[in-house]
Length: 274
Length: 274
Image (cartoon, each protein chain N blue to C red):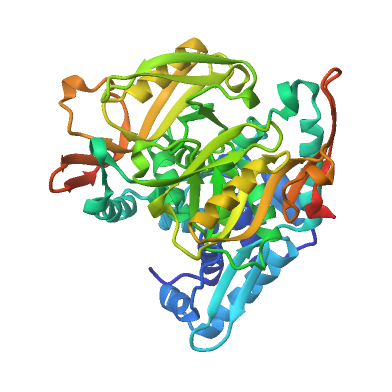
C-alpha cells in the first residue's frame, strides 16, 4: 500500500487490528505494510493501546522478540457490561415474554446484531484466560451467541444438530434427557466437525436444569474432546441447586422467579457479575 | 470522556464508527464526545473517509444540515471479494466435500468467523442500494451468513424454523416442496417475529432449485411482507434454467458441474461478479 501520513496510518492500523482479533501481527508486517520504521509503528501502537484500554475495548498485547508482535483481545469493561445486562433484564421482564412451560421469548433480542456483539465481548471477557480451540452450540437460538463470541475470540464454531442432516456426512448421535421436561431427545454432530482432544467452549442461550449442556458434554466425550468452559445467556434459577446437573458455568442473566398465572418475572444479572 | 489529543481521537473515532455501521452519528454528538470543535471533527472524518475508501472498507456518508452527521456503510472492493471467493471455490472443489444427493459439505467454512465477516461485507455491498428492514434465513446453515450480513447492515435477523418450537409462541406454518427432492416439507415463523409490510432480505447458504427460498417467499406473503432481495452463498447451477423456481438473486459462488462417481466438481464465482 502507498505510504500514509501518520494520521491516516493510525486510522488504518486501528481498523486493521479491530478486524483481526486474537491474531498476532508482527511489527515487521506493519512496518512493511506502511513503509515505516518499526519505532514509528511502536509509537502508533502505544497510542492505540492507550485508547483501547481507556475505553474498555480490550487489550493490546505486545510480545517482544523475534517472534514478537501485537495482538488485540476484545473485552468489555464489567461496569459497562452490567449496565447493558440490566437494561436487557428489564426488557426480559415484560409479561408477554412468558411462554408455556416457564420458557422465555428471547428470539427478538437474539436477532439484534448490536446486542449480540456486546454479549460476544462479555463471553470473550469471561473466558479470556482459558485455552480454547473451538466454540460449540446446539441449534437454533444458541447459534448467533456462539458466532458473536467466536468473532471476538477468532475461533471456529461447530453446531450440534437436533437431527442428522444429509448435508453433514457421517455423524455421531447421542440421546440425552432434558433435565426440566424429563424427555429423551437426540443430538448429533458430524464426524468431521471436531478433532480429537479439542478444548471446547460451550455457549447456549437458555439453561434450565442443564440437560442440553450436559448432552453436549456427553457428545464431547464421544469425540475425546474436553470442556474448556460453559457460557449461557440466561439461566433459570428457579430449580434448587440439587436439581441442577451442572455447576461450573458463566451466566449473564438469571431468571429468579416466574409466576405463570400473573406472568410476573424477576430477572437479575447472572453469575458473571458476582 | 476526557479530552483526547488528535492522534488518540482519530483512533477512538475509527473504532466508534466501525462498531456502529449504518448508524447516523451527528457531528454534534462527536463534538460533545470529544470536547472538540465541529471543524476539527470534520477534518478528522475527512481523513477517516479517505482511508476507508482507499482501503475498500466501505463508504463514510456525510449528511449536511441540522439533521446531518456521518454514517459508515461497510462494503468490500469487488476485486478483493473475487480473490477471496476464488480461494473459497478452490477449497470447495476438494472431492471429500461431495455428499450424497449432490450436496456440498460447507459446514466448516460457515464456522470460520473471518470468512463470514468477509461474506457479510460482500452481501452488504450487493444489497447496499436497497431499502431493507430485516434479514431472514432458515435454520441451520444460513444463520451465520444472515448474522454476518446483518452486522454490516445494522439490521435485525429473523430465523424461520423447520418445526414449531415451544419457545417461539404462536407461529405461522406453511408447506413447501423442495425443488430438487420434490418432497413436501414444513417451515414456520413466530407471529411476533415479523411486522406487516416489512421489506425482507433473504439469505441462505445453498440453493439448488430454489424451493426453500420460494418457501420463505410464500411465508412472507402470509405476513404481508415483501422480498427486498435474495442472496445465496453457493448456488448449484446444474439444473436447466427452466427448472429453477427463482430468477432474481445474488450468488457468490456457483457449482457448475459435479460427477458423483469421481467426486469431481467445478465451482466458479457466482453472479455477483458478472
